[in-house]
Length: 528
Image (cartoon, rainbow, N blue to C red):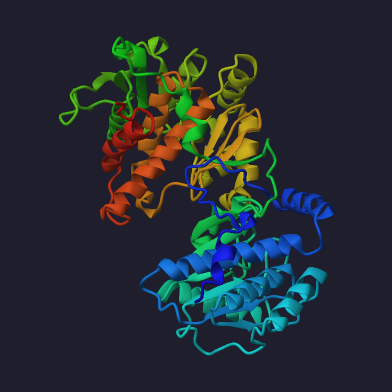
């Protein structure tokens, strides 16, 4: 590689942004097409494709220069599809060639759009080697680049492109360093699902153009996209996006100050309502999480019998039979952990839902609402007429029951499902899963970027319920309390994994102490 790369690296339109911890706008295909059309009307021909190629090349040049485990003299292999994504790949190859990097382009089918034809002419003029042959092995290349199909793909990958996608995915799982341009080919950038359930590229890195896409952060998209970098290429995202990436800037300002003059009453009394006979573990997990999340006082109200009189690891928790705790006096309620589905649980919900207290509903409470129309009506009416929206935290199967559909339909369009839950129940909906979606009845929607497979173990949902309940008790608005709980819950799993304690074998009880550390780091950092 030569110093010819330097002007490109400093190009103002090749800015690369890490979206983590930023409330990025997440743009669907319709929004992106409108932005592209508007930008192209005021720019010289081929400008956006040129900028996208510059950004992709910059990403590769920086990684080649700084990744000591890769031989910088190894060639870069790029596959170009027949559309504009293929044109992007050709521009990347041209810029790398001019920077002194050895490249090879595989173009099984000639590119067709005018912009892509221009990129092809530029590549040929620069001496980029282009052929239709696919090598039997990609092991001799430092990086391989997926430029087959972008956001416009509406049909399954087929023909020669399907086996190439499989070859790239196999490379990502073994030797790594597979870069997808804009989106991994075959991925629906709106939903995070594979187009028609067929085949898609699994990349280790994605450079996405103009703006981030929802599908890169939820469902299968998180696994397929790998590490995501945003290249705005000089196109400004809308100021009022329909969907954002969850980030501390959206919720940190809502936390109460921890002044010297504060006391336990300042930070709220929360009650965890649940724990039918034989199921006391779930509410205790939630209560411990609430304690670590800064709640002033934490109670557990057990529905059943035979529950412990106190929690030995945390005697600060106050454990009660449900009938002996005045729930109307609480600052927040987290309802449903280990609640069961007996008639007593139904009657408890009928008594508790009308209370003028912020409420989170999880687990069995959600199933009971799905099964009893009067409970569902009460939840909706509280949100509509009393301005007292609940926070609902269903996993996909619980969401399906609440919507009268099936989990497959929920997962087919998680954004639509979360919005439907928020609208139907006039509540803040937290649709759990890969890329948890948080939707408010007023139309605000966020996708959460934190968390990993460490959360795939029993009790982690109870911990989330305790966290959000604690933040409600501290006075955070419903939507922001949900954003904070989901973000910190996932970040705790990420932090434990980074320390070698995950993703396998993390227990739900390990999350709360890590949440405490992260909460203090993000919200209450030490000041000089």
